[in-house]
Image (cartoon, rainbow, N blue to C red; front, side):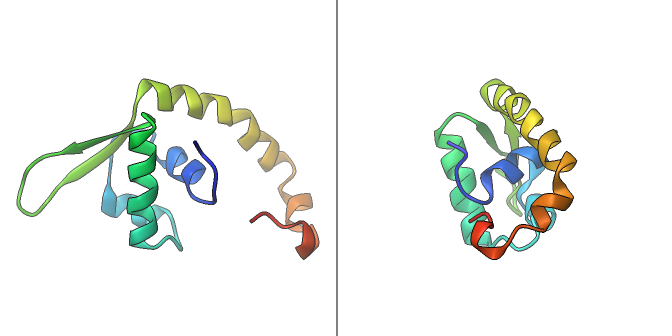
Length: 99
């Protein structure tokens, strides 16, 4: 449900309802196409809500569902571990790098 490079980062930035453009700015390096795809998958899995305001220009906000909030809570210890070991993780040889 949260495999890949971007889904956990998307979850991390959805503390409050967030517009698409803001997510794109927060997730440096993600293409618009990939962000759309990842958000659609998270929505289909019941992790993210999409609220379309039916306005011109279009305005859409994304937020975590209760299920998504529980997932984010479960991922917090992993984030803490990563922060604690950031220096060591950054020093790993290229054969051990994350995909």
